[in-house]
Length: 171
Image (tube, rainbow, N blue to C red; front, side, top):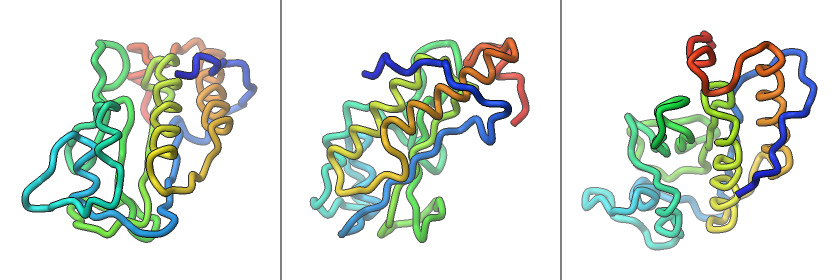
């Protein structure tokens, strides 16, 4: 984990409280059955192709949440889902789609989650990059810096990310 994410950056106003990382597949594209393996099981209606290492991502603890995938929070603070994973077709998030997918979106709400969860998000991004044939829209440093900027902005406003006050802010 990256404990080095520090909330020291200067930001007058966040453009968005979300840190979104787009992962684009560099060659072959996965199908829905491949993506389901991130949850630790295979759907008999959508068999995996066997050409991707999504099963190696099971320790990240993704589960199916609504039409997408997410890592659910195991604590009372922050949002119910820490990291969202959504498939992309033509760089657009899709649901109820069997694939193939040209990319994935990993998303983290840095306002609605405690600051410490930024390191968890960074770990998820780096794990996907290590195990899948993808190119990332952001480097690890850019991800860490973006989380830190958002955390710093809200702390300057007297709002602790992941707190009840943070959850009450309309986005």
